[in-house]
Image (tube, rainbow, N blue to C red; front, side, top):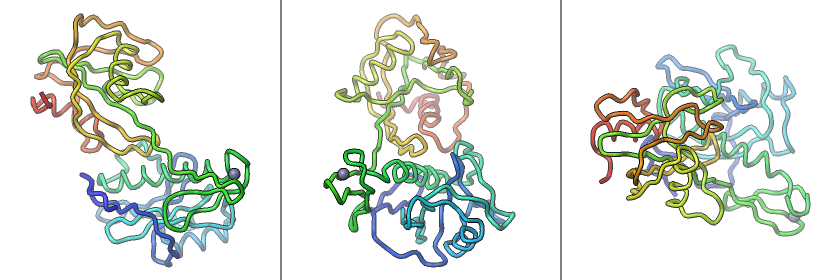
Length: 288
Ligand SMILES: [Zn+2]
C-alpha cells in the first residue's frame, strides 16, 4: 500500500530485503533519534555503512542477531531500524534529538517518518518474545508481522485509536491545557478509545470525564497517524448540548475555557491535527 499522506509519501508495505550500504538507518536511544541537519536544514539520518562501523567500534547493543530491520521507503530511499539501544556516533555532526521537539524537523515528512520509525521500534522491542509461551519471535517473510515458531501466535503492529475533540458552541470553542505535562500550549480534549466502545462514544465519554459537558452532532473531520504515542488520531467536531458550565477533571487538565472564533490564542504549527482543527474553526471551515 502506498499511503498518500498530506505530509508526503511513506511507502510502508513490508518487504524482506537486504540493507545496502547507502540506505538510511534510524537509531533510537530512549525517546531520541540520531540525526544530522544538512546545509538546506533538512534532517538526514546515518547510512547503513556509517552505523555498521560505529556499532562495531562502540559495541552498540542489539536484541538479537538481526541488527537492521527494514521499516519503510520514503522519497525513493529505504529506511532501516537499528534493533537495539543505539550508542554514540563517531561523527560530531550527528546528535540525538527528542522526537517531541517538532522544531527539530524542517518538514512534516521528516517529523512523521521519525514518529513512524519510533512506533515500529517500540513494537519490535516489546514483542521480541511470545507473550503466550515466551519463545523468541521471528519476522514473517511477507508482511509486517511477528510469529511464534513454537505456538503459532501471530503478532501484528499495535495501533491505538484515539480521538481529538473540538467542542463548539456557536462561535466559541473549548480549549484546554494539560495538567502535569511538559506540553503547556492550548490543546483540545483528547483520549484513547476503550475496548468495546465506538469512536462517537469515546468523544462523549472523554468530554464528560474531562470537562463535565454533554455534546451532540458529532462530525468526523480527519485522521492522523501519531506514532510517537503508538496511535492513530481521529479528529471530531461536535456541538455543546445543554449547559456550558465546565467541571474540570483536575487530574487531567490544568484549565479549560471557551474562546471566541475571532480571538483564538493559537497558531498552526503545520504539523499537528489539533492545531489544524483550531485553525479550521478560526476560519469557519469546520464541517457543519
Ligand atoms: Zn508462542
